[in-house]
Every structure is written in structure tokens, then in C-alpha cells.
Length: 463
Image (tube, rainbow, N blue to C red; front, side):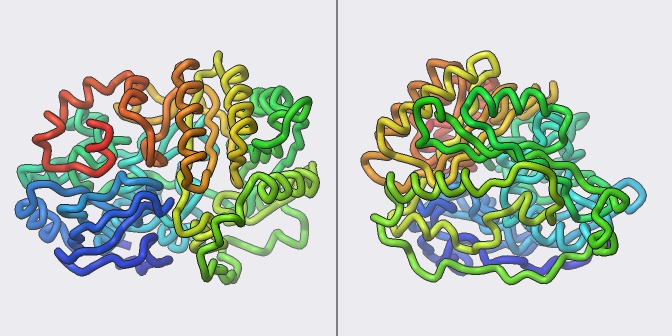
């Protein structure tokens, strides 16, 4: 596939993306905050380098799926979706080289029918390769294989002096580590090489387990570490003996021989699907403690324990079937609060977080629990995971939910956890201290005020 063009699989995440150098109102996926940004669209590395040379401050932006202000710079936001070519693929090894603006959705469309799947995938396929590296995304298999950056063999990075350098674990290793999870602050990722995983079918063997409370779901996670994929939906509003009741899903890539007879000839081709859209912003009162509570109770009751086989799309990307689902949270937008707690503090910290959410009346429509493994010794300097449990919650933006977030920050800090920069829209700068390599990162990329690559997030946090 050397040099093959990749066509977009979905519209850009934020509306109003302007032409080169023109103002555009942009936001992350949470639609909070919004900012008027001068946007510069690039379709080649030459355009990227010219934009770097001509702008004193800028940040690169992929498909806008970071939730907050990480890919916003009012002075210059460099739109990378036009750099979307697959450059090379080796079918003998699965090594793929592509430009940073290639969507994961396009990689799936091109390579799943050939029997290949990404080694790590987040919960949406509408992200770019550059964005996956800049946020060092994790998936449902972190406990087994680590982050996406653990599988990137090399990348090319445009620096603030307009040089392009190759980075890997062996070449410019410190810069490579800083770029993994570095939120675009080290430079503009131009291209990357990583290995895909061979698969035999597009089906997932799924095991569903209903857990009556937090103790049960954590015990199930610990008993299921041999499974490749694991994730739990958790009812954040259940209390008493049902605190933390959950539906845990475990998964493995299915082989043809284990599929039910009727499904053995389905092959690797994607079934025809029509994605639905949310046509309007929901009213602000639509999501409240009662509606969220009713949804959570219904979801738990409808879960069917046992084994079945599902297509990889609904297993990995259930929300992608509903385009523009962020509009459900209303015009004011929403923020996702994602934290990780160390393994030894997980039970106590998660219970306290759930208590705080119940007390504050800020139930999350979607709450996800995952188990992180130790990760690799060569992790990114600002990579989010540590061995333990990560909880992700979505809150509509309001004064009340922002107060709840501050209360959750205190719990996370008291238990030695940290927050995910890719989801952040409101964390205080003090929470950065829980990234142990923060000083090393800052020393490597230089003084925050003098750097060329800056975002509203980096300015807000002093990152």
C-alpha cells in the first residue's frame, strides 16, 4: 500500500474548522471549553514546516477527540487531518508506516479485511495516529500489552527550529519518550511506524459477568488477568450493598473453528452498517440524577451473563455507532473525568470516589472501569497509566459538576493517583505533581513560556 491515499471515514470532530490562517471556533470532543483559533490546514510536511516557521506559538490538532483544550491554540492551531497517507506496509511483519493524520477508522477499514488489527485501540476509532501517540492511548488490554506507544517503532517529529528528526527507543530516545503522551508539546508528529496484530476473524469471543458490587468486580478483574481484553461498565449511583455494581466484559479475538457454525463463513469483511446521528443538542435538564439512575438500573438488569460472539465494532467502539453523541450533554458541553489509582489504593479510593459522586448528585451517564498493568520500563514521560484501576466518568458542565470534580481531585491526590491529560478540561496545576517524570519532561522541552508548541491546556497547567 505504499503511497496509497486514505479517505476520511468520519467528519472532523468539531464543526467550523476554518481555512488556512482563518478564525474558527474550535473545541475538543467535550465541547468545553471553546476557543476562537486561527487554523492552518496542512496536507504535506512542507506545509507543516512553513506553518512552524511562520508562527511564534502553535499546537497540532488531529481529529479533535481530546476532550478539553489540549489541541487548541488561539494564535495557531495546525490541522493535521490532511496528512493522511499510508506510506508503506509489510505484510510479512505487519509493520505499518503512515502519516500522522491517518484515522484509526481508515486503518481498520483497510487492514481488518486483510487480517490485521491495531495492537492497542482506544474506545473510539475516530482518532488520528498522531493523536494516539501524543496522548499515548491505552485500551482494554493495557494489563497485557501496555500503551499504544509501546508498539510504535519510530516516528518523525518536526521541531520548533523546523528540523525533522527521527525518534525511537534507540535514536533520540529522550525525545521519543517525551513525545509519547507529551500532548503535542515536543513538536509536530509527521509520521509513525508501528506493528499491527494478526487476526483470523473480526469476531470477539465475549464473556459477560454481572458483579453485584465493587468488591465482586475487582475480584473478577484480578481473576481475569489472562484475558486479553477486559472492561467494566459501573453504576456510579448505586449505593449500600450495591455500591459499584458492574457489568464486566472480557474478550478474545475469535478463531474460525470456535465460532458457531452459522458464523464461520463471515470472514473479515466489515458488515454493512449505517451510523446514526444526534441531530440536535439535548436540553440541559435531560441528563439528571433520575434519568441517569434509571438508565444505569436498566443497563444492569438487561445484561446477560455468559458467552457470546460479537463483531469487533460494538465490542471496541460502541459509541461510534452514534455520531455526534457528545450533543447528548447539551450546548454547554461536558467533561470526562478519568483518573487512575495505584493497585494498593484501588479499593478504598474507588469506593470513596463513588460515595462522593452519589453525595454530589452528579451521576455519570457513562462510567467505565479498567485494570491497568505495570506497563513497560520505557514508558512515555507523561504516559497516564500506572498499575491499578482507572475510572472514567462523563459529566455535563455545570457549577455543581465542576465542584464535584474538585472533590474527586482531592480523593485521587490522597490515594496517590493521577488524571489523564487527554481527557482533562478543568484539572488544577497541582495535580501534575503526580506525574513522576514531570521535571524531566519540562527540562527536555524547555521553559513553558518560551516554547513554540503550546496549547490552552499547557498554558492553563504551566505544563
